[in-house]
Amino acid sequence: DIQVTQSPSSLSASVGDRVTITCRASQNIKNYLNWYQQKPGKAPRLLVYAAFGLESGVPSRFSGSGSGTDFTLTISSLEPEDAATYFCQQCYSPFHSITFGQGTRLEI
Amino acid sequence: EVQLVESGGGLVQPGGSLRLSCGVSEFTFSKYWMSWVRQTPGKGLEWVANIKQDGSEKYYVESVEGRFTISRDNAKNSLYLQMTSLRAEDTAVYYCARNRSSWYLTGYYYNLDVWGQGTTVTVSS
Image 1 (spheres, one colour):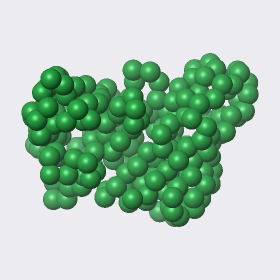
Image 2 (cartoon, chains in turn yellow, green):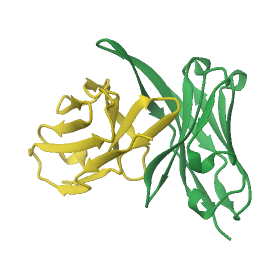
Image 3 (cartoon, one colour):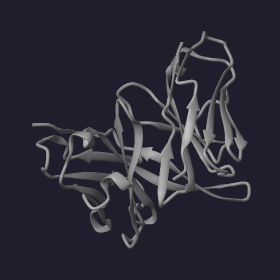
């Protein structure tokens, strides 16, 4: 199975900061990677698909990049509402096996 | 508004069974693969099972293979997860999610674009 590893597991930043979260896959997954945001007590929300595609309604301060095994989610200028846990998810084999990263908790 | 609503969670003893349901609205259910994903504080998000649009293909994470069964009723716009031989480690919030195919640049990519609010399953004596 393809494993995905996120780093850091948590971080603290201030409003206006630029933040980067990384995700590394255990094998080449091209750009079959998605990013989700989850706030306490809520379901995950899709932010970025196909490594780069911004989901409709997601603020443009969020962006994704990377391909192969290394990926990043960047928030260009933090807002207070960005406090959440962020997960990456590989979708290289979208039906047979889906795996998530362990999450990155972002504190503002 | 596109919506998924889970139900059926609760407290069950080890070895017991439970059936989760997920009702959907405001989209053509029969056109989508559907997924169950669970979340525990210790293990984060874990994909559990997928089912094809017509129910002809089903896939499971290894830890539930042979114990859980995913199914759907397209006429009732409903997704199900039958869970048997439950273990303490199955304790989690269970989400149903829509598996969407998105065209991006040169190909199709799948993502979980709509999620339910989750239903809690607790396996304990």
